[in-house]
Image (cartoon, rainbow, N blue to C red):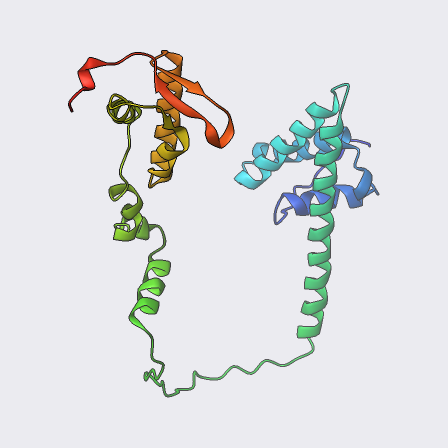
Length: 241
């Protein structure tokens, strides 16, 4: 590409300038020679500054974008550069199509005589005949306030699972098992789980049995449904309680 000598033209935006450069030098939008395009673009932006023209942030953002694409194109593996060039090409094609359609609409509008008229009054009907349930109105209000609804307190139902749940500790379950065992004979292990009323109670019972077996305070005998537990020795601290 030969050096461009600018009679500083005014472009609507960076896309307009890029299309001008591509059209002037008959480049392929889908295969943009990014190195030449960066040089021509930055030359134009520099000329704008030298002519004391106001350079909008859009032109500077595009300059930074083109320099970034040029930089990643220098890497040994430049897949990212190909993706960025493809994205830019797609945006340029879309912008060009919009320009073409705008030109067609303008030419069509030029064939019509527009006769303005004064605003015409019209009657407004302020009545509203629909009926809504209170919950529906409340939900609509929460949707309308957007982020503000985060400040609303959660419903009471949100806390029922926390407040009403009884927590069973493994230590307490160990004491209950030992208290039952000091009274005498071997006990079927299944009966311990049958007494559990909740899932947490079942888990606590299972962990308590494991801990008692680990510390050799009880022994397991039998298999399957016939498995029983017996005290390895009597813990006097539970007798009579």
